[in-house]
Length: 170
Image (cartoon, rainbow, N blue to C red; front, side, top):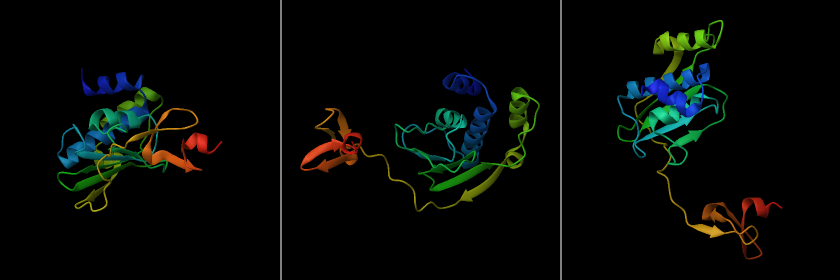
């Protein structure tokens, strides 16, 4: 299965947003000269929760579950990809006005045909001093009210009782 088909299968359909994420991921990997993350070798910071986020997870190997995929809600089709091993990173952001085409297929074709430089703004990071720590596995506690397991770091203590955030707010 080629990479575009893999991304489309994961997301559910083809669309310009998915194509943007596809290009963000592949172009960032190429610029950094790194392969898909097996564990936490890479960190991905996305700036929108639109369709492209799915492509970025599939192609970079960065996921919420592994703790190396971060969402910073800035409303931009942008990806910062960081290599822990190289201590380098790159940020790619979609340029304004490049999404041309009469329909979704024309837009997808346009996204695939443009060079990295024409499609994205590019910012290089030669040294990354402020990168998130590797994921930590926290102990689970039981919420005294709903009886569900909750991560220790997400509990509230009210009158000596351990509560999840939801129950503590009710």
